[in-house]
Length: 306
Image (cartoon, rainbow, N blue to C red; front, top):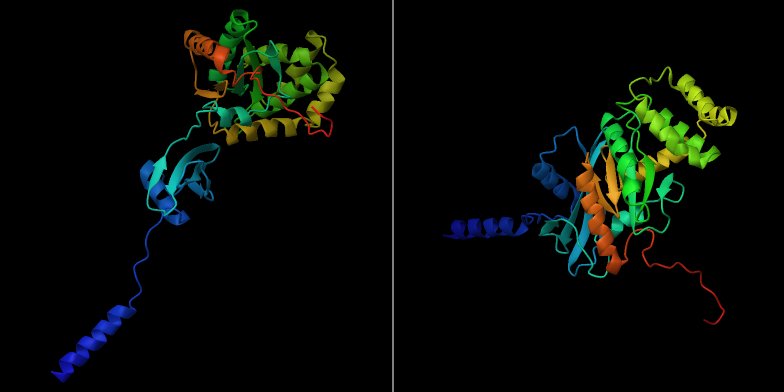
């Protein structure tokens, strides 16, 4: 009996000293990464970056962004994690006082982008495109033939460079050239835009510069400063910023459009896009929370009485 009691004593002591099993938590980055890999079937060759938790605006929840990337392709998923780390919700949160696409609107920088249409229009269309992309060529034709002609006062459109260098070897040089022309003569960007897409099958990395020079001469654009800019890659930083902006907005293919912040990836037919724009025009008559005429006012602080 004495040996039995002693054995039970040491057994209970060993159990008491066994460390408790760690509680899994979605706030633990490796745990969330493993869960997301299983959820999306992301294999090992896809790199996964789990962001730090940040306030979500929802009581009891933190927001965590998870980015999967491989080469030029990437996907961003947003998760809301309970503060105890036990539950997770995938999706987006909305504030009844704000435009549902406010995050995209805030991320779209159009100040130095080539634009066409009416300034102050209630609808802004932002186009992320690649001059060597065949699908972009078809969409460019559709937009140029219909967009401003149909909505001359209601739409302002902006072009953003998103060259996919891994598969298109002259897309970035074309983007740099377009920016050089825009710096020299802003109104000549759109003829270049149309020329680059129209001559897409004839252009190559080896012949691009010579054909660019011919375009400049034919369109009475000062060739020496544009070619100097092109050779020095003086506008490469502008192109890189545009590309980075697209990445931040989860653009991973071309063409991708944003209509008042609403992301539309892939080719759309004109009737589809027209219907979306008409809906947005009607909505903005009362909402006034998007477009270039959003009703917002930026003022500097002043000591003067109001």
